[in-house]
Every structure is written in structure tokens, then in C-alpha cells.
Length: 235
Image 1 (tube, helix red, strand yellow):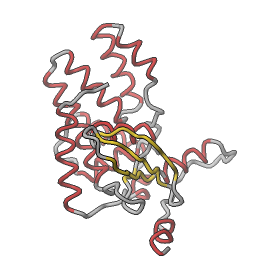
Image 2: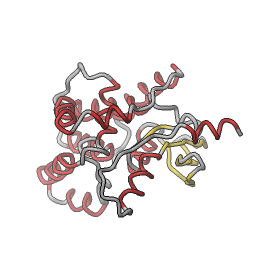
Image 3: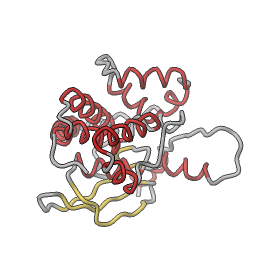
């Protein structure tokens, strides 16, 4: 949906600088679940207002908080996207804005919103949505470099995995498998023909799926397990 653009270019620069540092900060899931919906929504508003005082840890809170405060969707359906493209620029933009009102940190939708701004030659909106994508992707890369299942990038949805593959790694997935350590192992090929394997930590995704099909009535709460990766490293 999005060709080579400043979204991918700037995101790659940020990601490479984070990878070079070699230090990772896992999401503080307990803290994120403790802040409450009112504070979470306030942080989302600040994010959309381009508040420069938000730290990368704040951006992590906003991104992962979408799983706990009712702002996580399943991503746009391609048919809906294609239909919206036929409504003219105003209709296309309105469709994307309506999606973001429900899933404000969905990476695919943010990238598509940049596309709409690019098509409309709306420089201000291009800057806004490219910066939003860059801030989120950089915050995600703080959680890991994706090179192993013990340094996997934490995500809240499968669609975000594909977005990161496309716009950050500039790669296409060829094979996918779920590892013992609850990581999506993606065997990919990059635009320049390089083959590489990228890991995404999907403990949260799996926990949400398990909760959604269960008969439990208590509110969803997620405990991240470090023991899985510790066991893996000891083998």
C-alpha cells in the first residue's frame, strides 16, 4: 500500500540506531495495566497532538496499552481499504480517520494515513503520520532487535508484524512458525534479495486469543513470562 517513503526511511534510521545500542527495555506490562483508561486516553491524545515531551517509554505505554484499554482491532480488511480508495480523497481520508478513532496506534492504518496525506500533498499531515509511525516503531525496537527468540520484538497484533516487515525491514515473509518461546519466527527475503529471520514476541497476542475463547468472566490481565526464554537459553 505504501511505496518507499519517508516513513520507511526515517524508521530505518531510528531502528538502526537502537539496534546499534544493543540495549533493550521490555514493556512494563504491569505498570501499563495499572494506569487506568482515563490516563491512557490522555496519553493517546498527547500522542496525536505531537507532544514532544512523550518519551519512548511513554510511547511503549500507549502502544501496548491498546491491548488493555479497548483500542486494539484486527487491522483493516483489504476489501474495505480498496472500497475506500474509490470514494475519492475525502472519502478515503475519512475512512482512515474513522479506523484510527478505534485503533489509534495500528501501524498499518497509520502508514496508510500517511499515504493519503502524500496523495493529497498535505505536507503537515505527512509529517504528523510519518513521525507517529517512526516513534512507535522506534519504541517497539527498544524491546529487541528481532534477531533471536530471546531478543524478539514485542507486538500487540499480527498485522503490526507485517507492517514492520514491510516498512522497517523492507522484507516479505516467506515462512512463519510459532516457537516454543511463543515467538513468531518469520523467514523473510528483503528487497535486495537478502534472506533473514526475524522474531516477534507474541506472548501478549496468544494470551489475548486464549482469553477471548475462554469462559472466564474476570477482566483480562496479562503476566509476561520470562521463564520461557530463560529455559530456552539454558538448553
